[in-house]
Length: 151
Ligand SMILES: [Zn+2]
Ligand SMILES: [Zn+2]
Ligand SMILES: [Zn+2]
Image 1 (tube, rainbow, N blue to C red):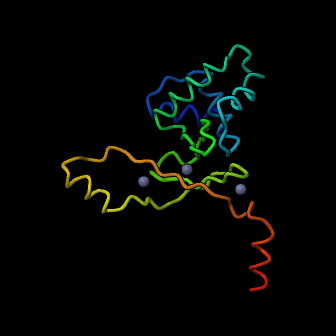
Image 2: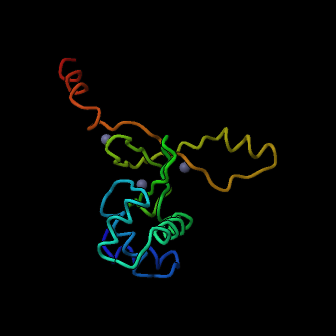
């Protein structure tokens, strides 16, 4: 993701375009992996010497609240962030816990029964979070390939 794409996203969401926001977005967007705030900071402080870790946290949280950046939840309970190139459509992610790659899942799996349960009690769903964790095909390694070729 280059700065122009970052600018376009911020503009569409009517968020203020600042050099720090753009730097963080292009950092996350270029990796195609999820990163912690600390890892983002390590990468961008070379270019923006004046930026501190608390600022990186604050901007990541702002971008997450606006829906630009996705929070990634893992068993270690550290906060991770991912910037998906697909900003237009509602979708969910498959997250590899080994190589940190994130794949888009086209299907939303929010079932009718969930909607009905909430509606029956007079409530309404305002948002939902789904993230599937696992080990991707590439990380599952040659074992899997061997199985495929012998089958
Ligand atoms: Zn992987
Ligand atoms: Zn995505
Ligand atoms: Zn969904």
